[in-house]
Length: 322
Image (cartoon, rainbow, N blue to C red):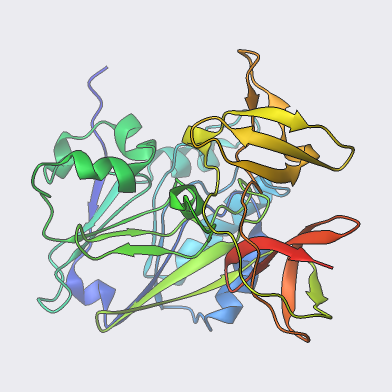
């Protein structure tokens, strides 16, 4: 099959001086609306939504229907992601809308001070946008790290992507906040919502060439009673290096040895499992990092244990002893 990616061109006058990028809503319209409220979104504001719109969450069909209406606000540009499958329950109108979504949005002819932008769900192989296959741009895993394979970075524009949760690029201290790679002009914004236990939904805001972001998540808030200094931060196990061996089993927590580094660390038992090749693996909530907190701080609690919590503060995840 020789199908090529659908490319939608957006001119600079449609971008304006401020626009926002959101990716990987994954069927959670209430969280999406909460994020829009947090950034004070107004109808007519420019918004790019970078795919993985409606699957995996608790309100999949409702999300798709909401986005179809939401797009009518104007200046809304929506991509199709690798998880945006055509489900059996979709109506002909919904199927048509989904199948007609672009795979790439080309705003490379932006203002000179911006340098232009290209929006894609997961990644690109070359500046020749029309030559890409849909499967490539929808599921280019680990784009930020594999982009180092380019002998010479081929893009003069910013490339904005979702798809690969940014915490999977964090090999020391886990963080769900957007990553800006100034050298290669890549902006990776997927906060891991619906894919990581400590995930969040990010809104990346570009205003007059300056970057900022806001985020929301679904975790309960807890006030910390005693201070703790930062420690560890040497290892955060990510998907590509997820293989471990059990050292000490436990009911709620266990100790594992990370096979690549030899590091032994305490991890939630709920996150350790056997894969289809009978290998012991873990890739979530697996870090030796302990968050710095002061008495009275509030944190998002991802999971609670008798003597500690796994929590998130300002987008950064780690352990807090109680």
